[in-house]
Amino acid sequence: MSDDAALPLQFTDAAANKVKVLVADEENPNLRLRVYITGGGCSGFQYGFTFDDQMNEGDMTIQKQGVELVVDPMSLQYLVGGCVDYTEGLEGSRFIVTNPNAKTTCGCGSSFSI
Image (cartoon, rainbow, N blue to C red; front, side):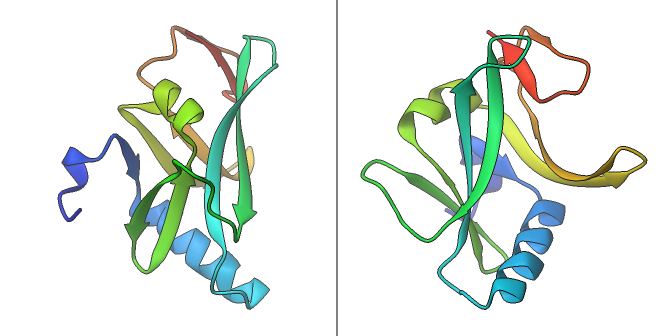
């Protein structure tokens, strides 16, 4: 899809650029950034990120700047309308999710409830 606004999950240029650098460092062009939701954290659910060179049935991919963000269908239902970004600051460097579906989040932003 060429229209980012039509995608159920946004993937920022900053996140795509960081993925591109990390994939190049690993020298495996098949790696993709996978975002997922697991139970846990102080608010009930938490975000996870991993690099994966496998695609599973039903996975959705978002391509940007020659790299891919992958999300499984179960996680996607909690992430629709959200945005995966990359930030660098005093708290360190990390991938983050802005999620309009989250009713509450913990102080560190890594867990949420719906």
